[in-house]
Amino acid sequence: VSGTQNGARAVFKYAQHTGSSYIGMRYTPGTFSNQIEKRFMEPRLLIVSDPNLDAQPIKETALANVPVIAFCDTDAQLRFVDVAIPCNNKGKHSVALMWWFLAREVNRLRGSISRSETWSVIVDLFMYREPEEKDEVDEKVKKLTEATTDEKKAGEAIETPAGTLGGLELADEEQWPGVPVGAPAVPVSTGGVVAADPSSSWADGPEDAVTEPPVVSGGGWDAIPQAVVAPVIPPAVDEGKSELPAWADTPQ
Image 1: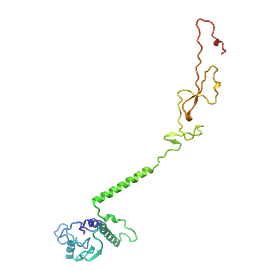
Image 2 (image 1 turned 30 degrees about the vertical axis):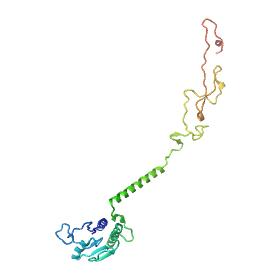
Image 3 (image 1 turned 180 degrees about the horizontal axis):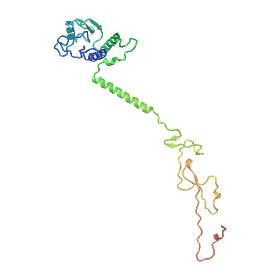
Image 4 (image 1 turned 45 degrees about the vertical axis):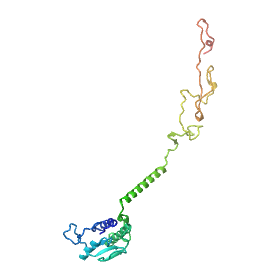
């Protein structure tokens, strides 16, 4: 039994882990002495959080000769109390810890858990929390989770496949001789003009072909020399003359 808000959570968890009955917060007079009461009980042992606040159930169990165990502070009334456990029965952490100790000891005496092993139930489950305090804890946990997620995303480096840069294939020295390694190997459009063969000489062209200096399409490593071949245009023929032009005597 616990008439305090801090102890109501603790007695509930104690009853849950030991299989006993509990009364939290308000105690209805006559529960242990009036048989016509709707929630009438006949306890074999009574455990209270504060003898000063739980004086009514202690008085009723005394009439039925039921032993009483109480968590007692320095100002506690020990009348009708058979076993007094000295502790701080005002603080919520202290009350929760004492009920947790008592529940663990009961389970050890029953043989449910071993004394050499740590009890899997944590003491935090026995503690009462205000709704505002619970919201603050949930908000802190949410912020911590978001911060951890952001740090994880920031720490993940974007992996780029070897030999690529931003989706472009980097130049290879074997495939592109003379091109700096690491430069994007993107084919350069020549604008429809056929590039000249680097191995051939400019003097290998037709004798009457007009050659001009090479045209450079851009600067940098992609500058490609190109030759522009002018078409051969025959001279105009005078229709009044019957003789053949001089260029017609040229051997074919």
